[in-house]
Length: 401
Image (cartoon, rainbow, N blue to C red; front, side, top):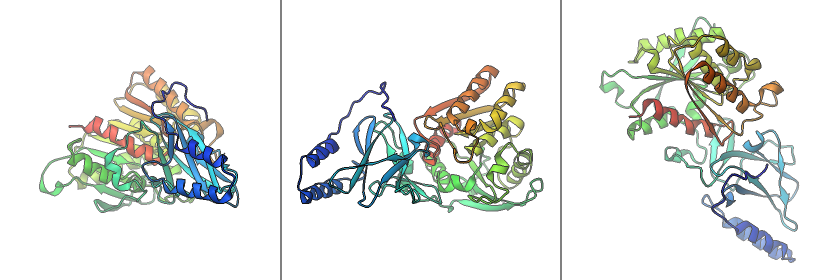
């Protein structure tokens, strides 16, 4: 992990280096223990992880019986970086280097044997339903105040959504559906644009979309909208069918989504029944299928938003399809993290794990074909912290008042 030479270093914090030098100059073990205890006690949410400058951060962990390593977005959660133990103490440390406006998620691992766990010194965490990650925000990263109630990793709730079970016919099994309605929906006759989300329960629990919509509407940053959350079967389980069998450009799923699901929602809620007022959204595999749904059925969805989309799927199958087809009346919004160079290395084909380059290839084809699209890269990884924050960008872009 190399320092980005183009990043200008503005701030400087010598607390850790001064503490380290004092430890090195102290031979008395009891005094070393006192210095460690005092330094660790001085850390809180305002000054840890220790940001030595705009592009350098220090992680710390106390452990006396073995080795500690760090897994982070900087190595796509694939390569564990060993922490160094300070001689004569139980304190381990490591420095990481990232862009000044980066936001990184990370875990610790003990002895390369146990499951990764969040940094106990860092209260900033991101919820993943089945685990929790720690969050490092570099000095120039701007936190969105909307997420303040969830900074320590609390899951999002279902208080503001309506639950349905849709027994679709084309897929041969049912789907769990949740529907968000704007405040005062029942008190008016207004019709609303609709957002459709893949991985619906994850967008509720880990991206807090109902809360985000409530706040953006309340703050008059966007017009009121309806949101539909579709959860794949066998969520977070290896059993089939699952999100992978559905999202891998499955034609039956496209039919289910565009014909059965949209009809179900339009029949029950006051929606604006026009392609230009429907957006389909997804992350990773869900980004792939969202792009594909809108590309195949622009008569239903006028816009697709792919967050870190798995567009390298099957040797760029979707990219090649777009390249070889005539221009469609659909708009694309695509974003990707610059730390997404080796996603899913344990289970995806080795030549498909560089999501950043895959999305750059998609951008090139969209440009060449003349599509109306927005493409953005962020100094972040393949994470819910990334997706929840930048979802706000498209909401304000499309529905801003």
